[in-house]
Every structure is written in structure tokens, then in C-alpha cells.
Length: 149
Image (tube, rainbow, N blue to C red):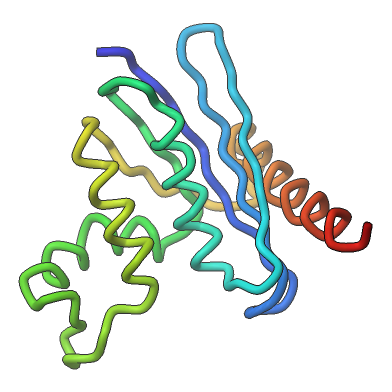
């Protein structure tokens, strides 16, 4: 299996508000950068979409190390998701899981790969994380520019 290292990040100006997502994929000596944005969203949705878009970009099963600075994504995928599924996508308080559409998509995509989820502290000089942050902000800025013209 091909080994791919992925860094993801989301950005939001206002929460909710306009948002962007970014992903840096590295495999061997190759790099691929992805980004996009939405006019009205939340930071958590952008963090999830970054991971989803990155995994969607893989065209065959891979060994993936996915870095995120979002504890929401890391805890969600590793700790909370199995319980949510057992409870019919409900929280321990029996309330519907927020962003269930994205959690279900991420869960489905992750099953096609061997994914190791790693948390990295944001804005602390990690090169991959910093680039993912730049991409998320670029996606947000490009989306805002598109809505103006």
C-alpha cells in the first residue's frame, strides 16, 4: 500500500460565518494541495470537510497518517464515532449528533484506507500544519472573491 501523509485544517471568520478548508497530501516526493470554502459554515464543519476532501483525493487504498489540529475531529473519529453508531447517531445525552452528514462521510471514506489519526498543536511551527492553515485561508479568500464578482 502507498503511504500518504496528510495535513488538514479548517478556518472560519465568524462561527458560523464564511469558512475554508485546506489539505496537504504528501506521498514519496510528490505533494498535492487542496482547498475550498463555503459562504456560511462552522469551523468544525471545515475541519471535517478538509479530512473528507483529502481522503476523497486518494484513488486507491492507502496507508494514511492524517494530522489534524482539531481535537473535535481526532476525538470524534477515534473515541465518539463508534458510540454514536451504536446509538443510532445519537450522543450520550440522546441528542442527534451534530454534523452527522460529515461524520458519516468521513467514516465511510476512512474504511477504504488504513488511517492513523494524529493530533498536532496548531500554529506551533509544524510545517505541514502551517501549510494546511494557509490553504484553508486561501480557500476561504477565494470563495469570498468568487462571491464578489
